[in-house]
Amino acid sequence: MQFVCPQCKSELRREEGGYACEACGLHFPVICGIPDFRLFADPYIDIAADRAKGEALERATRGMSFAEAVRYYYSITPDDPADLAELWTARALAEVAIAREMLAFHPGEGPVLDVGCSTGAVLIAAGGGVGVDIAFRWLVLGALRLREAGVAGQLVCANAEYLPFAGELGARVTSFDTLEHLRDAPLAMREMRRVGQSLLLTSNNRWAPLPEPHVHLWGVGWLPRAWQVGYVAWRRGDLHPYRIQLRSAREGRTLAREAGWTGVAAEAAPLFAPQMSSVAQRVLAMYRGTRRLPGMSWLAPRWMLRA
Image 1 (cartoon, rainbow, N blue to C red):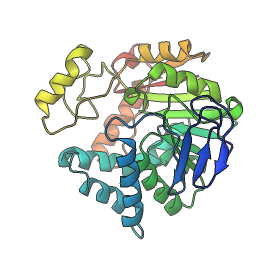
Image 2: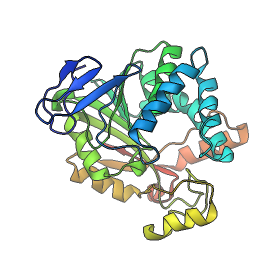
Image 3: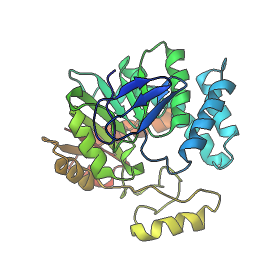
């Protein structure tokens, strides 16, 4: 794959151990086979520590299955509370099944570019493609997951706001439950438009009458945004500072249109829970039957944009 400088979009020169931009003087290493084009760090860990953790994970998880590696990751990450780590692990293990269902809503030509790819579940469901994520350590686990599945995909560590691709990529862009984590969502949406020919995006809904899905607390999204950090800190003193900005379907649609996407449609997203009980599956089936009703996107747990 041909990369460009994420900052100035100039051509890069391949050098030993990575890439260099002669126009702006930046150097980008390749570590564990993954190019790192980040201009700023993951909000939870600085770049040097993230790279070190990724390299340590790569060594420690050799010979492990993906499921074992995810559990190992949380065993060495005490900042993540055990109750939430268990929920996040279950979600990670179900992501390929969920991605297969979601991709049915995104037919068309062109390679898949998954922004916020985490451990590469969408690439596995699509049979290949390019995955971008800010978290190098999770991409290391993603490489293991791709090898285990026998899928060839390109994993790239980069900011969604500064994608290291030329504008002619022509990708089918996917981005599942990533928008709420971005430092600059409008800029990221413009970058996705720059390289993409179509878009399928989901995000957790601010107004859903359910617990906030990341920290599992009631009422977070309904509070004024200036209060949310303090509220989560008060309720969960064992968590890192809350840096998530949940949006409504209307806000997501506006972001997409302002970024230049045309034919933007917002609707309640389908929900999938392959590991849930038969009773829960019946409840989800009822939801799927009603999610297209007028107004459902306003209260649905997640909303979906197509463009």
